[in-house]
Length: 336
Ligand code: NCD
Image (tube, rainbow, N blue to C red; front, side, top):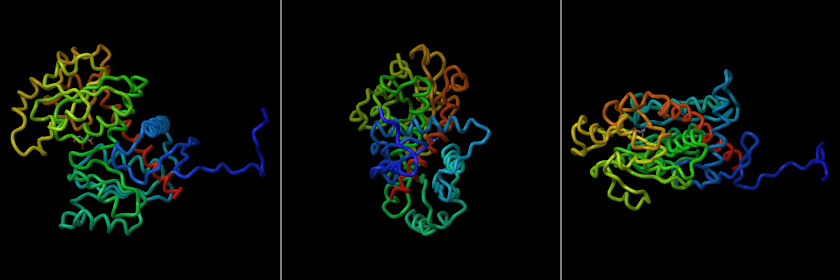
């Protein structure tokens, strides 16, 4: 075997178009935007998860900063309230060395009636590199991506998608079980209004998990039978034998009519407590994207039990997964 070429005559490694290199790893990321899990393929997801694993290590160190995004500007444009998602994108950007600007409706012209597109085009003129958008309308991030020249990341569009949430959930599961393929995952509760559910169904199925949907008929979308997931209207039956039980928030703010019974009755049938959880696999782990309605969809005793709950891990993984997405998109910008 001949020794590797070294010294000044060694050829510069050439990256094929569409390939990016982050933290010494080369992988394809052929898109400018991060809008939907359906744009990804299993290799890209696995690469992003590997990258995120690296960032988890970094985030646990005293010194958490890299300069992968040095000189870049990230704008957080949140038309809907957020605690976890907005702050984790902010931290993710800052830990990678970007300048981060947070825009929220109350503090901007959005509250004076400026449209989504006007706002985005105005912000785009300030030359951001990455625009993170949350909006109440399905398709908002995709629409924006057609109007601006920077990368757009969907941080939740209406009931449609929340792709970085699905990525961080996959990361939490892969770290807990060592794999995603073959896991039996029940997504339970208000599936109808949940962009988290839609993104998780798409991503988990793509990675080889079996996904079930569990909820009252009024909170399961009519088209769910085309999602390739078995639907259950009984929580105990739906979570039977499951490795992961993912609870969803009852999204009262998105409900026009009465879709759920009283919160007490909802808890009785669809709230996760220890007794119902006993129907799942003995090693079951419980997840929730937050914010939680304690005593409505989940009992505090389950949510706070660190032996079963991955809810705090999900928050930690959120920063790492978003760092992976920002790093991949920004490396892609370098290649343009
Ligand atoms: C979710 C959201 O906003 O879609 N939360 C989150 O991103 N952490 C779920 C929810 O609001 O219930």
